[in-house]
Length: 516
Image (cartoon, rainbow, N blue to C red; front, side):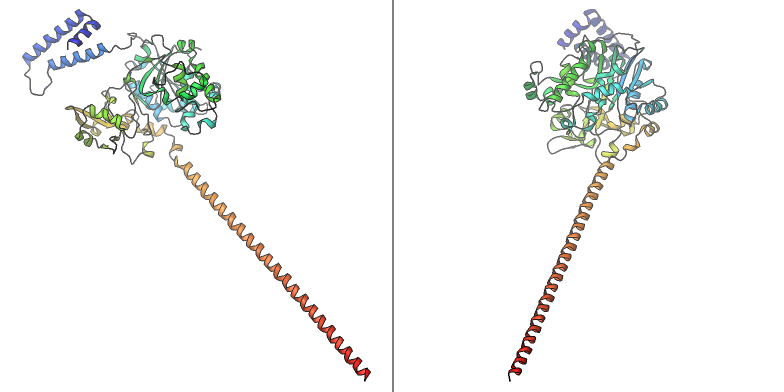
């Protein structure tokens, strides 16, 4: 406690701290005289202690400085070439609803020239109260496409990662401009997120000379994405630490001027060129993430974990992550009440997310996407999330399950339900791409093609066998005919021989008679 007071003393000053405790003590004393305390009931004094604890926590972990009272527009960018717009609409709606000043937000959706008119019309109807500008630029799209490696090096990579629009975050300033110039700051969001915090904080935050801000993620290191043996062969290993934490690109805050000064985009393109030219595959995982990590290094401002509460789309928790639940108050009863089970190796099924109660950005990374789970995971348990503190008022709390963690009640819901709270059934139906409803179609066609091919091979084999049989029959008939002809010839020769012999016998008889 003494250490905490000392830290507070340094952070907020002695007079402010003394005044705060004086007011708190007076309030607690007066309140205790007027209201009887019931067992287990929170009192004013306990509330003051809670406030002091919260202030202490914020004091010992300083937040990045912000510009107070700023009214600058907040330019928020998303990019996708997916015809299903539901996920993008949820990002936009959730960010708008949870903004302290929604009027500051300006959304920019970057897509293909072919999709742009449809997206513009749909957003105009179903996000009518939110300013969304749709952008498409074939020249920039071609420039990005020219940087992508050939099929040979990306054959084993998930299809979406090789899309041009996976690289658009590095080219935002070439798509978005205000009066012919890009905004001073651009915020990029992945389309599989839900924004529960105020994006105005990210507009006002001081980047401290960095070209961008992102969330540091130390559960993965650079060596997961880059093959350092290849990097050593290329001679570029000296400036990179294989054990360095990575930055998650689901949220990116860009200082456009600083980004240009350091030529981050050009460095990314340079790394893509090195990747394409290397004889061995330089990336171990991903396509756009490795060159960005190498180009940026550690030159970014860490936004803090609250801006990337992730794993909302993952199916199961491995043992190492399940330990976090047990360390944070989960007992067997709590696990059972949630309907979760332990796997044979100590993991938990389904995934249980704890950070969602206070997370400012919820990231549905993983296979269980809220807009497609009914297609792929209808028979599976859905990931569970601690109920966010600022859910919309119309959210149905009947679906929540309450468990006790260290004797404190905590509510959990399906993570998918959080996502659904920010889109109506009507909007979801209108923005859905029904062409994607049957992803099995390609597999079926492939199997049908395989079956048709097999049937064609079998037909050809049968035809070949039939022709061979006919040829054999013809050969056999020919052989029979030749044999019959030979037999007839032999018979003719034999008959001729018999005739000659009879003629000779006749002549002998005639001679014998003449001699008599």
